[in-house]
Image (cartoon, rainbow, N blue to C red; front, side, top):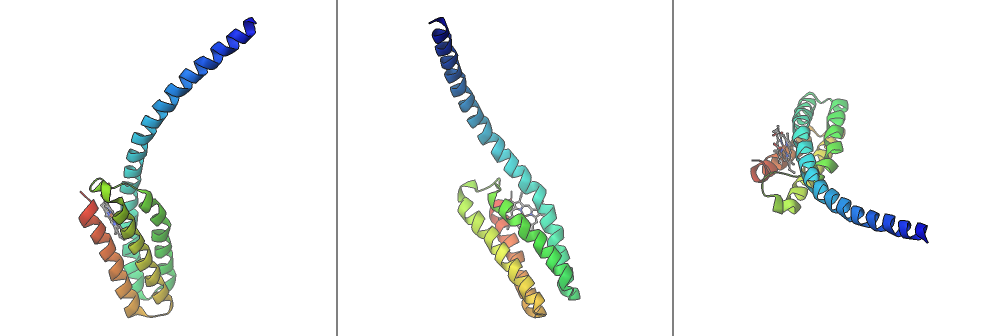
Length: 142
Ligand code: HEC
C-alpha cells in the first residue's frame, strides 16, 4: 500500500515536472530556433557570395568542372536557405522561399547550359540567379 502511494507521488511529481519542462523547452526552443536560423543565414551568405563569384569566373573561362563545383555548393545551401529566417518582413516567408527556389532554378539551368557549351545561355541564366539574390536582399535584408 505504501509503495502504491509513493508510486502515485512519483508519477504526479513527474507529471508536474514534465509539464513544466515541456513548457520551458517549447518556449526556449522557439527563441533558440529563430536565433539559430538567423545565425545560419548569416553564416551562409558569404559562402553564396564566393560560390557565385567562382561560378561567374568559371563561366567566363568556359571551365565546366569549376562551374559544376560552384553550382553544387550553392545548390547544397538552398534547403538551409529555405529554412532560414530573415530579420525583415518575416511574415512574408512564403515569398522568401519562392526567391530561394528562383535562385535554385536559375543556378541549375546555368550549369545545364554551361555543360551544353551554351555560354551565352549560361550567362543569361546566371544573371537571373543574381536577380534572385538581389530581389531577396531588397525585401528581406536589413
Ligand atoms: C531567399 C533570400 C536570399 C537569397 C536568394 C540570397 N540572399 Fe543573401 N542575404 C539574405 C538575407 C536575409 C541577408 C541578411 C542576413 C543577415 O545579415 O543575417 C543576406 C545577406 C547577404 C550578404 C551579406 C552578408 C551577411 O551575412 O549579411 C551577402 C554577401 C549575400 N547575402 C550574398 C548573396 C548572394 C551572392 C546570393 C545569390 C547567389 C544571395 N545572397 C541570395 C537573403 C538572401
